[in-house]
Image 1 (cartoon, rainbow over the protein chains, first blue to last red):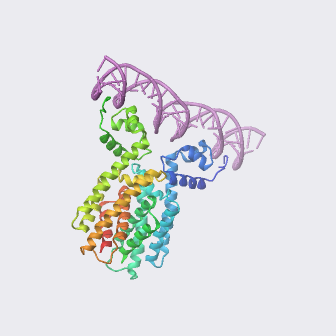
Image 2: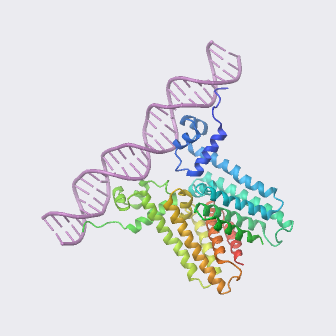
Image 3: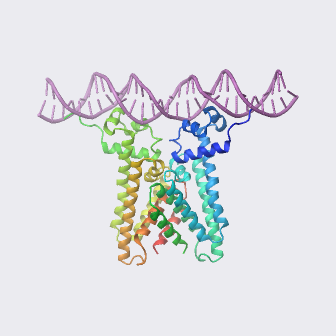
Length: 191
Length: 191
DNA sequence: CAAGTTGTTGACTGTTTGGTTCCAAATTCG
DNA sequence: CGAATTTGGAACCAAACAGTCAACAACTTG
């Protein structure tokens, strides 16, 4: 009952995600959001409560879309090493294609390290990435794809950390050779 | 001639660095700067021109102080592997001691990826870090400290990338075990 | 159709923003 | 002394800020 919404909440969150991703939280004004989402100021506040809450939604959306996508690749892979290489090289491509965007998760971790909820969301997602890597590596070890004396969890923690570094170097305009090189050396840790 | 400055430019830049480091560029208002530097608004603009220019000075100061410090450790080390471990573990300690601060270089890379001058300063400094690592690794190889078939430049690019990842994970509140673990695995790349 | 409910809108609020300008007082040098 | 220059601080600016609101619009139910 009542007047139905004339805009789609999901696409609005997507567009907000895009804006926050590109510009960060502080540099994105409510005016930017009004313009970018194509809805009036009042509707925005009615639907989302505040800039802060909309940011939280956008961040969660990003985590669901990107981290989960990455995790599924790892879970579905029958060969783990190529899967991990593929994941890392895909991130390299994303950074090269659009260096200003980088990774919203990294941006959130650095820009909003004083905001509990943001930090919690970020570290939760990184925990999921670590767990997915650890799981894949565990399977790889069981199958003899990596040496038995390797510790999957330790490797996963290392790879998770390296992955964030990749995104930072991408934003710092490192070139393709640099990033792909770094990836290959990092993969050497699995040997 | 004229009245001499009553505040010290250097310590003012230091304080500005501290503020920008903690809060980022956007979240630091001119009011914060006036309060933090302990000088009046007018004096601040007379001395530094604008918030933007003061930020540039603060960032350069950070690079000179922290990157150069790190580089000197590497250059002076007689054993390279322990020196690299020491450098990485020191960063871990810094992150654990003050997670909200993180690394100003990483913060700058992510928050201000649309500002040419900032990005240039960041990537120049990362280039210096890479070069220092490469130089140290080159010496290590010459001395037989690492295997002859290792490529110092490739290893240096990997370590530079990993180092940035460490700082991000530190901000995401990874614990000591996680970070130290990641460091040990990363050092394994030298074997 | 009327009542009730919810959404949309854009003008409006009060605050804060980065930055400028003015000033009398202070301090130096020639 | 007097010219030069910086000081702190207040006043000021237009723009941008996050957020609110009353009036209007569209839907469901009775």
